[in-house]
Image (cartoon, rainbow, N blue to C red; front, side, top):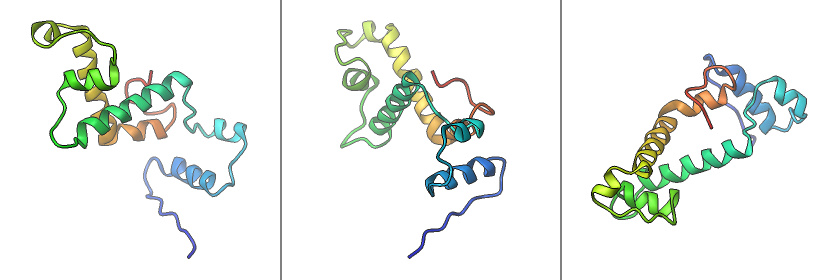
Amino acid sequence: MPLAFIVPRDELAPVRHRACARLDGRASTETETHLFGLLHPTEFQRQRLQLLCDVLDLVVVPASRPLTSHQLALQRIYPGMTVARGAEWKSSSHRRRTQRLISEARAMMNGGYRALLAGGEGRQKRIS
């Protein structure tokens, strides 16, 4: 059965058309994709986006019970962390960064990813 693309007519329609063409194998040159502003993240940006996806997986789809921010930090963000629970954790920069990553991951899930697809225009805050 042949595949079909459904592209909504909104402000991101040109980006979606280019993505469909690229998926279909028509837009393959580096120059062409650069001109169209398709996302080509740096290695640092790619790692950060992967971290945000991992955080989102652990926060949104918990196994049996949700992870605390401390458990999340130990599991994925700071595997070798020695900050204990309690007052030390509550006042740590590790906790604040973990909370920011959780917030950013949720914002990306709730539409922020569209800013990435738009290229330079309309990017939310920053990717790095």
